[in-house]
Length: 321
Image 1 (cartoon, one colour):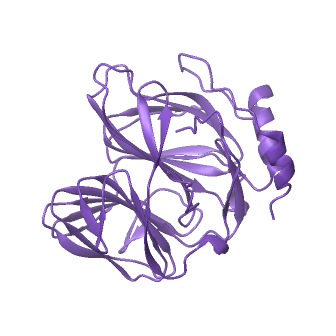
Image 2 (cartoon, one colour):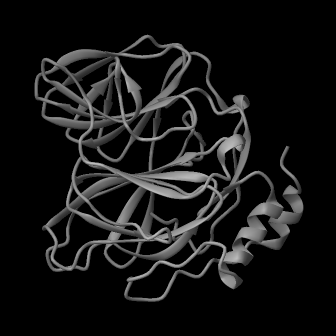
């Protein structure tokens, strides 16, 4: 999924200076952003008070949207570099196309994982004949410097491992949870898991004390370490935890995100993750005037133009160290 913000701002993320080294309960409110004609997303990362959670650098939650008489998601071809995109659905379908030639329909609780590496472009759209409801999350994982120029590639995994307990089914999207490991490729120690909880559940999940964590609420109402978390909000939990208490009064859906704190400082702008302003400017120019990001074949429409990078902002930032 793209950041379609035409007033995109340059954001410096990462570095241990942003990490809370102890358990906290920091409730993050979303920013509402239009994505095309019929989709509005709730953006939780980057947030005014929180930039990253481990290597997780971008989190959008959308739906449930009634798109029975709407085109649904329609995101034209756009570029990415220096990151992985994670597509995760609870309802509906999304058709993914990219410049490596991938063409894949992603369905609920299937992993669509695109590694941009040095450069890729892709589009996302609801199929012409689609389900009534669309509900899901789009997330980005920042690639560490040693791997951010890898060859771009796409992975689709329909069968993912699960961890179960009374009233809880945890599907491991990326990384490892309680001994269950996702087949998705990762480049830093992290975890992403979808938690389906039945009404009246009271349980806990084992956590890694060296990871920082957050929980995104997808549906229902759950209490996470005693804090009520409503759909479209996210609770940042800090580090130093060995378990996470969960309690529900209704059926609820959550996403657990975590990982080792991302030590490198990164520069994120529009759909790019780099290390310097110069890299970002070059990527923007390459998208507009070269074939670096390849071509998305089969999409019916024009590709997405890049917004302007504010020159004053670039000059003020200089090189990020």
